[in-house]
Length: 309
Ligand code: SF4
Image (cartoon, rainbow, N blue to C red; front, top):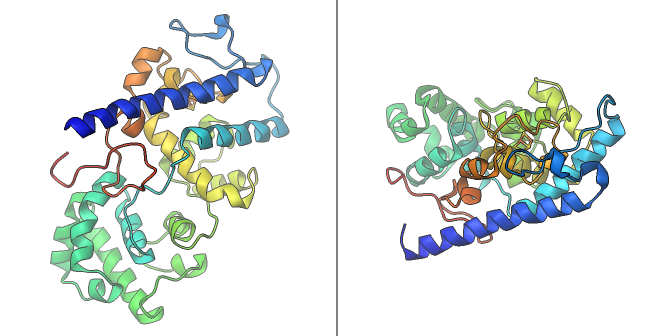
C-alpha cells in the first residue's frame, strides 16, 4: 500500500471506529431496555443486549426493532450500494449472473475484459462459446455461466430489441435469471423497489428473528411486510454490507458490531472487542473494497485488478 493508501487506511479505521461508536452510543442512550449495563458486558466490556427473560417478543416489538436496525445500519453505511461494477442494465444483468457462487470482487475483476470484448447483447450472443468461457473462467462454474450468458443475450436480442426489460415477469424468463438476479437488476438499474435475498441477507434476518423462513421467496415476503416499499432496495444493500463486513457466516464480529444491543443473536460470534475488530472486512477493517470503480462517497480504497490481490 502506498503513502496515499496508508493514509486512506488510517481514515478508514477512524470511519469504522466512529461509525461503530456513533451507533453504539445512539443505541445505548435510546432506552433502558437496550442499555448495556456492566453486568451485560462481555469479559472485555463489549456492549451486550439486555434480554427480557421469559417473555417472547411481540410482532409489533419485532417490527420496531427491525426498523431501528435499518436506521442504525443507514448511519453506519450511508454509502451502501450494489458492489458489482456496471455501467448499464446489461452489464449489471451479466455481472449478477456471474456473481453466483463467487464474490463480487472476483466478478468485478473479470468483467472489464468481458465487456470490452462483448459490449452489447448482440455481441455476446454471437460469441464463440470457448472464448466466452475463457474470459469468465475466474468466476467459477464458467461453462454453465457461459451457457446462461449466451442464452440470455440471444433472448435480449431476439425478444426485447437488444434491451434489458424492466419487468420482473420478463426478466425471470431469461436463461440463468432467477428472482434474486431480477430484483438486483430492477432495484439498481431501473429504480424499482426490491428485496434481494442472497446468502447474507437470509442469514442476518434469521439471526435478527425477522423471519424463521429458509426459502428465499418466503423470506422476501415476510421482510417486505415489515418495511415500506421505499426502503426495500437500500435495506437490502445495508444488510448485505453488514453481512460481508461484520456479521459473517462462521465468525460474526459481535464484539465490534454497531447493532449488538438490538440483536437477539449477540454472542453467536466473537464478543471480545479486540478480537472482533480483527474480523472486520473491507473498509470496516481498513482494507480495499470489492469494486474497482467504487462510488465517490465510498470511504474505502478501490479493489485491486485481477491478479494483484
Ligand atoms: S455480528 Fe453478532 S451482534 Fe452483530 S448482528 Fe451479527 S450476530 Fe448480531
